[in-house]
Image (cartoon, rainbow, N blue to C red; front, top):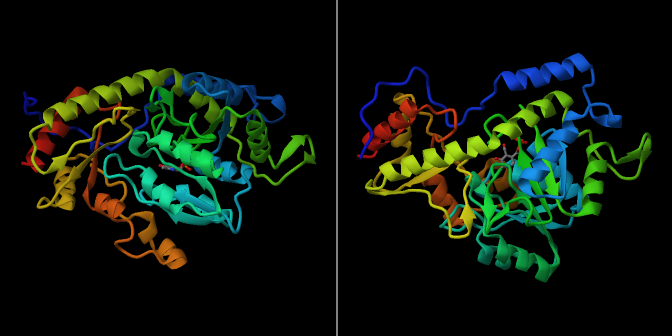
Length: 379
Ligand SMILES: Cc1ncc(COP(=O)(O)O)c(C=O)c1O
């Protein structure tokens, strides 16, 4: 049964929206009143509490809070000493932070195309891209749907390379029952405001490897092991206590956020069943989606950009992630001379994808509006 017609919403419905309330405000106030603004030297406790809560949630032995997802990726690559002369295999269908961090370390990005099934690395393409210079594989769990990890882990073991999971969008996503970010050597999460949970800006590293955790902690603070004793190069990548306090409260909300996203995604799926010339998102048999993004493909002869315009006019923030695959952005074209047609699955996806709002701040009326207007735009 399609939803009853609804009146236009009072606001423009964004593709994602953080939910912050009195609890976050109280936690931030507590930090301000305490005067302990950093966890460095063991003063503030919120970073540690946030790390412990995320470790429990995700089932990782170690969690290291960082001040962005980008910092998390950079630190992971530094920890594995990825440098000039090395290659890292990554998908071209992602946010640019994924691969820019490889370049900032002086290494070369080798793109492997995505699978047509789930927008993530195609293991067969990864295998074909491996060379003696490969140091790491960087799968992205795009939109919150996990990449097919088993074949990637097998390849990594066979060729003795590392796996750095870009789980920036994948809090709560699972691969064969295991949380993503705990399957490769290290996981990198983002806490940017559009993400499943947020601290404003922030990131989290996850690992089960004791030695690696120690290295990552050192990289977070200038390679320091004791005050003013530096054993390697590092940065100031620490998450401030003010932000960690928000994170502690967001962790309490996370299960409800995930439940609401799932319900909203199911609602959209059930109402978009009969629409022709679109592909609705599904979960692979081994996947638990966190529904960070509900991304449909809009197939020819429909025009994706026109559908987006129609939905924007109806106050729905239908979003395109990503219009240009990374290998075709000006900087990567210049650096690597990738040509159009070299990553056909990613290039096709970039022309077809459109994400509809399923975030937990969506009201029932807004959700019905999204469905009703989408049905109209896709009629
Ligand atoms: C896939 C992906 N990787 C990396 C990042 C970088 O995270 P941040 O914005 O927290 O630096 C993001 C988020 O913006 C992302 O979506």
